[in-house]
Length: 186
Image (cartoon, rainbow, N blue to C red; front, side):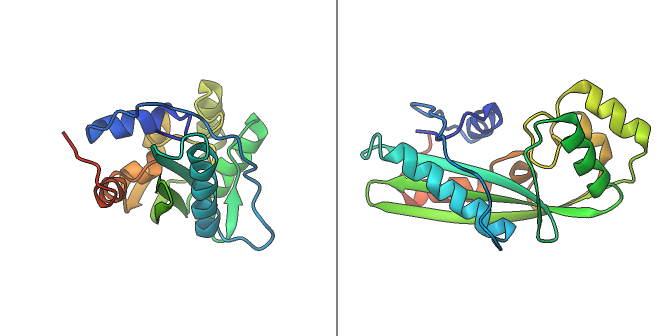
């Protein structure tokens, strides 16, 4: 089972030949705890999502992930308004930021977890760049206010780490967790 409603995660899993038997979105509180650092938040949210869905079907293999974008220790929101997205794009303009993904795989009483961090550098964005991107609407619900797999790709000057992590699911680490749990790839 995949504990995520993200179509990007479904597409990424398909790249490695994995089709979830069921897809169920976990409804959990994603509010960071006081003093919680971005990597710890991503790890906790992935575990909480996996736990919530695995409790419904304890015998199923359940995969969950969460992606957190940060500038230093500052956690950027999953943008719900154009103003939030605008603020995020202004903040990451001309500088680097990190994308942290927590992955959790549950199989009965056992679970495996990983956190993957990638560094992303964005070229300096002018007001016209930001407003044109906002007008396209692909920022909605995206951590940090952008989608690297979409039109924001033209803003990215450097990536250090996993591209699939930045999209929303680090495939190398996910495949390793699945293998550790005994999943057989076709």
